[in-house]
Amino acid sequence: QVQLKESGPGLVQPSQTLSLTCTVSGFSLTSYNVHWVRQPTGKGLEWMGVIWTGGSTDYNSALKSRLSISRDTSKSQVFLKMNSLQTEDIATYYCARGLQWPHYYVMDAWGQGASVTVSS
Amino acid sequence: DIQMTQSPASLSASLGETVSIECLASEDIYSYLAWYQQKPGKSPQLLIYAANRLQDGVPSRFSGSGSGTQYSLKISGMQPEDEGDYFCLQGSKFPLTFGSGTKLEIK
Image 1 (cartoon, rainbow over the protein chains, first blue to last red):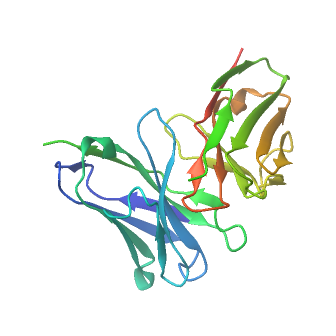
Image 2: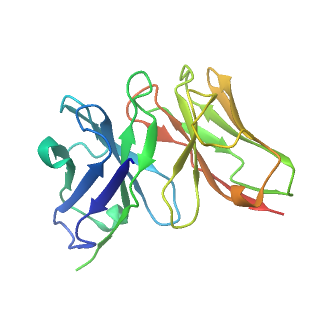
């Protein structure tokens, strides 16, 4: 059974760094990509980036200067770090499994989401 | 970035009615298009990918069509459980971009 679960602090102070972990089960990180997507409350979805099966990454250019995605395959975990958080970063953050080429963009399983607030 | 213009923003349909949601891409996306349903407080669920391929387990009343820049999702016979938000996603170029969403309600 494919599962993804996000974890991390729900509250981050302004200008500080957000760190989230996505723990997956039911599939291998060396066989499937993992995307990060965020959604401000009541608004649409924004793709943040992806870590490929080989470990390389691609990021949304709008976030690239602040964003880092990495993984630990032995622990089946993917990590998101984003610095210089501001109130516009308040959102629910999802990790999602991406299918294999050519459907790499298709996210077929999603985590439950991690709600992040930015406040002092 | 490729812009995905989704319409309508909201839609009200009677049970059994057929409804359509459209996504217009700012350039050709070569059928790299997926559709998602999202219910309140839940994560998105994949319905359609590659413009017209039905994801396993999704009811056959859902169908997708289109090519080039124009794509649509059709629900043939609205059911109560189809209420929710619907989003399209393009995968032709990075960054991946989503449509702004359609809120579908029962009339």
